Amino acid sequence: MQEVKDQTSRGIRRYRVHVVHGPLTDYLRYEMEWGYTFTSQAGEEILILDTAERGRPEGLLDEDFWFFDETHVVRMDYRDDGEIRGKELLADPDLGHYRAQRDLALAQAIPFNEYWSAHPQYHRD
View 1: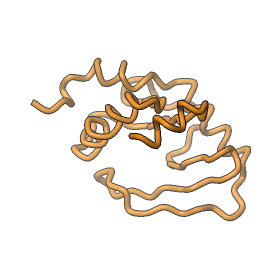
View 2 (view 1 turned 60 degrees about the vertical axis):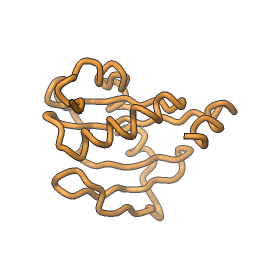
View 3 (view 1 turned 120 degrees about the horizontal axis):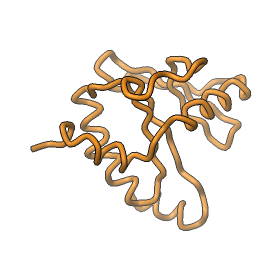
View 4 (view 1 turned 90 degrees about the vertical axis):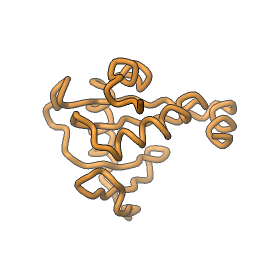
């Protein structure tokens, strides 16, 4: 949390769009409740695109990646239950492709706090 606070206080924008398809798996519920709840309070901008609710934007592929400084791409690999299996730094990514994918997701996503508040069924009892 301190790293997020330090970076955002220096003007570094940390943001992510997480594309999900509800209902959420137990792992995704855990990730949101025990991760996003706190990192968003520390200053990270987290947006959620639930394709079960909003549909999947035309052209948005089913791939997950981290995009650093619009020059480095790390492709993520997950198990069927949503738990991370691994990641790969791409040597020569098509940056235009990853910018377009990011922008498609950003255009339809909503802030995490709004999504989480609207879904109390995912909160632990």
